Image (cartoon, rainbow, N blue to C red; front, top):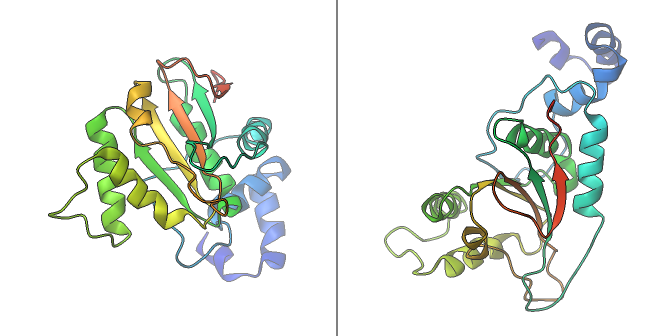
Length: 212
C-alpha cells in the first residue's frame, strides 16, 4: 500500500484495478487518496469510515441529490438543506453518513463537522469542542445560550461550503436550539445531514437500507 502512494495516479490505476476491481476502484480512490480540499479544511469528529461499502453507490448518489438539490435563502430564517437518515437501531445510519461525508467531501471543500445529537449536553459539548478547535474564545466565558454558541460557530462557516452531520438525534427540541440561521443574502446555505431513530422527519427523509 505504501508503494502505491509513491506512484503517480496514472501508474497506480492498474494496480488499484487489479487489487480492488472496477466496481470498487472509484470508492477506493475517494477513500484512500481523499478529495482535494483546502489546507484549512475542518474535519471534525467524523469518526472511522467503513471501507466495505460495495454496491451502495446508488444510495450515496441519491443522498447527495437530496441534500444538494434544493437551495433556499430566506433572510432571517432557519433555512437549511436538511436530510434525515432514519431507521431502526444498528442498521447503519451513522456508517452511511460517514461514508457519504468521505466520498463527497470535495463537494464541501473538505469541511465536514459531526455533532453528537443524543442530548442537549452532548450537542453543547460538541459545539464547545469545535469552537475551541476553531480558535474561538469560549473557555471561561462560554455563551449563555445554546443559540448564541451555535451562532458563534456557524459564523465561521458563513462563506464556506460545509456539511454538518448531527448524529443520533433523540428529540426535535435538541436540534432546534442549535439549528443554523441564514442572516445575510450572501450566506452559503447550510447543508445538514441528520441521523435519527425516534424523530418523525418533516424534512427530506431517506430510510436507511437494512444492508447498509
